View (cartoon, rainbow, N blue to C red):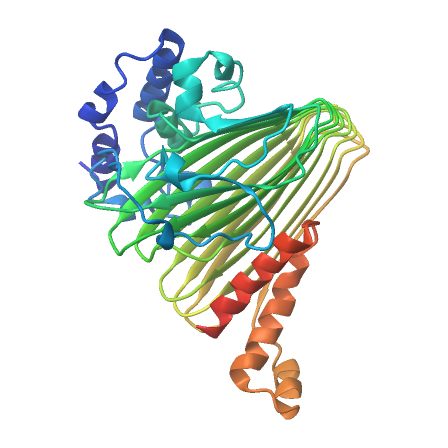
Length: 430
């Protein structure tokens, strides 16, 4: 049996699956669909085009056992948004922790809860869970579906959330266990919300966080979704986002990846309504032997939809970066405007990047463009800064931050923008 086959079998741990045997019928059926889809497809390997550059053999030795419930001290958490008062949801190993969380002001039209509470106390979430993302052909999403238990549930209708919502996922690994947070984010009827999501790890143990998020924006609504992946040194973080954007709505995503041993961030967006708009942007910075994979897909399914995609990477040491971006314009989706850009800096001769931008166009009267570049720091610019008395380390930091800045254009909130700039500066001075 191959390593991949062994890992596939270990991830569907019989004892872990049995704990869900008393679920509600519809939820039990959904989990069963996830299990069957994952067993059918198996863990993706490098023979699959979308996984050509990311080898999941690093999961070898992972037990598939559910990560345990543990207690985390508040002193171990640092909030990203210290300058403004925020609503805060905290999860440890995928479990909601009320004692670490703070809901200060929800307001009418905003429903914020842990997914576990929604599943136990009502069937409200049945309207959305499993309806946005499909398990077919998405093995890690299917694996998450097999173990749906907890995560965040955010539904906003006919209002604009003044305070941002901060969601923190803490992984405290032990014995190479797994957890599978499942999240639902919905904005409807002229709603707007800002969500900042952070993934962090504690300790040096191996863990696997396999999160999945379903997102729906419809009827003139806006979702601003900012994420930070700051996992521990041996953390493995595999995340999947499935988003549907409908009439006159907007999904804005920004991702900053800095931590973990292996990070795969996959985003699939369907522009499925008139004047639907999406913006995907991100920055990945890595060193040593870190591996960071950002794979995106934007589908333009109806006429007159727009998308902008802008990713930047800086790789040092023996780090490896992967960017795979796909824009698909369906037949009849005339008036589509889709643009994609990916640029990378190699800060070390051992650093590596694999980039694969793609366009598939099946309609006329569209405006689409994509481009990708990879290079090193400009020696003339570096010399110029050094000649002004700036140390080499600081000069390199200035140039790298300036290069990455292009990806921040989609962030409107100054407080959040300041947070991301600080994260990059902290990374540069290490």
